Image (cartoon, rainbow, N blue to C red):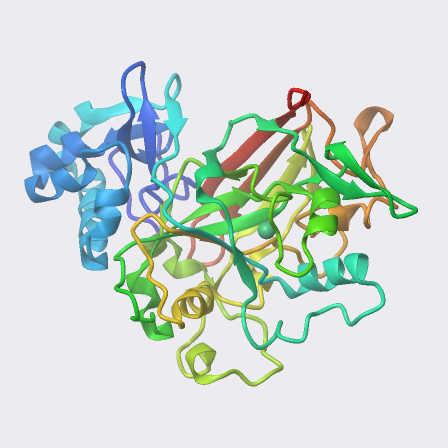
Length: 409
Ligand code: CA
C-alpha cells in the first residue's frame, strides 16, 4: 500500500498518491519545467533537488527527461526514493511545500525528446481480429507471431503530447473495383496502446537480456497510434505500416516510473509455442502489467481493453528489439500495439469494434460511428485498479480531436 503523505488532500488510496508520482513537463506562463505530480499538484523537480539533493539537480534542469534517462537505472530509483521520502516525511515539509503548485492553469508538454519509436503488435486478440478483417482467406495470425513480438519502426518526430489536434491525413486508397483514389482518409481510426520510455542507452552490438530489461525500462505512458485504415490497407504489403500511421502518434503527458507498478505485475497468458532462448522467460517470473484501459469517443466509453491480456511482455519486446545488436538511446519509446481483450467491448480500435465498418457503434442521440469524423474527440485513460494490498494507480489520459487537413492543391 502507499506510504502516507503530508500533502493536504491526498488521503490513503488516492490514485495520484505518493505511490504514483509520475513525471511530466508543465509550463505556467513561462518555459516548461520538469515536475513530479502528486494529486493535482506539481512539484518542481529542479528546485526540489537543488534544496535536498544537489547532485541530482543537473539531471532535471531541462524541460525534458532525457538527461535523467541517460543516467543509470539506480539513479532513477534514487530520485524516486528521494521524492517519496520528501513527500512522506513531515521533516521535509517546510522545504518542499513551497515548491508545490496547482496543475490547474498549467500547460503540459511532451516530457521527453523521443529518440527512436517502435510499435509492436503484442495482443493476440487484436492481431487475430485484424488478420480476419484484412486477410480473411488466410490464418489470422502470421506464422511468426508466436515466435517473436512483431513490430515496426515508427516516426518519432510525429509523436505528440495529449491534446494536440490530429489533422486527418490525405493519401491513396484502393476502392471497390480496383480503382485507386487520392484524398482525405475515410477510415481514420485509433489504437489504444501502452508505451514504454527507455533509458540507460546501450552500445552497438550489445543486446539487452530479458533479465536486464528493468535496467532500461524507465516508465510507462499511454499511446494512441492514430491509423488511417484505407491508406494502411493499400500500402502495407510487403513492408508494413507507413503513411497510414506516421502522421501522428499521441502520448499521455505523464510518465509513470516502472517502480510504481511493482504491485501491478501479473503473469502473462500461457505461451503455446516454445520460445528461443533470448525470449524464453519461463525461469524469470515473467510479468505483464494489470493496467485497465478505457476508450472514450465524444464522451461515451466505447471500450475497456485489458492490458493484462497481452501475449508478449515489455521485457520480451525490449529483448527482441535489441537482439540484433541495435542500440537504444535515452528517450526511445516503444508501444505495445493495440490492446484488445477477448470479449466484445474490449477492443482497442474502431476497426475491431465496428467489425471493419460493418457494425457501426451506436452513440447517444442516434449518432453512429465506424471511423472518426472531423471534430470527434478520443480520450484513452489508464489505471491500475485497486486490489487487496494495492491502491489504485492513475496513468492519466491521452486525448486528441480530429481536424480536417487543408485540401492539397
Ligand atoms: Ca499500433
